[in-house]
Length: 419
View 1 (cartoon, one colour):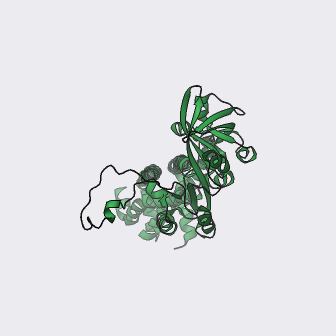
View 2 (cartoon, rainbow, N blue to C red; view 1 turned 30 degrees about the horizontal axis):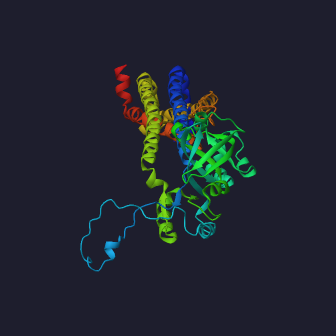
View 3 (cartoon, rainbow, N blue to C red; view 1 turned 45 degrees about the horizontal axis):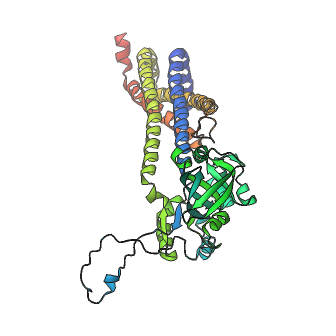
């Protein structure tokens, strides 16, 4: 069978019913357009929500947790050896909050090929004095360069300059909510009292806004040296090391390995945030389900249109078969019509879907909770466009297969006799 002849016959049949062909193509176009736009918008929103969390969360965190000693004195007694000892109300001992031998650990991490980078930190509990009232908060001593490179710290500094933490002695960046509680502005000096009772004056050089109100009411940031000085600790005093890996999926295994090697507590992002990952996975499934449903609905429209076209083109089918066309040839003609509708409608749908996504991406989205977001987020992943065109062809092929098979089985004698 000459494929050029099949194409010409398919084109003639489509031209004879141009309105029906256009309606079928528009159905595919609409399905692909909404598939691209909705999937891009929904996954873009998911990425935004994930980013708000993942940007600030290390893949592996090294720290020392304060806990009671598992080996109590009674267990060392020869008198009670071999007994089951039940001990109640055990208090924590003089546990080290700082990470032992932190400089050596960081040197080792810098040579680990699985690690993109790490950022050391010092956490201190403090009280900000507001008149006669003391407001409890946390001061995070950070490496500004490392936090900005690995965890996008500067993206959340809504006022001031994060680099001033290194450039200005005894400086601090307050959470936006905490600054509002203290009624301070950039350039003001705030008194801080540590848990040990020492009092210091720190200059406000910026405001930090994460988008989580409760978080911003208790968090503040200073340089590592400033926090070490407040706590009266040496330069090697480090309480946290936040690590970012090349592959986040390796985090559980790496955390277990580091826990054994460095003899410190280690938590990984999957274990700590299992519920968050589950929510993300469910949202992505819903996004794809909505898009695929739209394409399936468009496929049923094509099926109905091709079915009607076969009934209306019985004379043409009879003539084709009477002049020597086999059932397979007739089936190829109608499958060509179906695939042509799917391809043309799909390509136009990709274009209109992209333009609609651009339109959504330019709609203003201003909220105090997300200071870094100015417009609605859209994901322009090329994978969506590949899935869209392939699924449009698959849907239209399946929609045209059964009517085409039916047309190929028709007996021209029965058709002519019926006429």
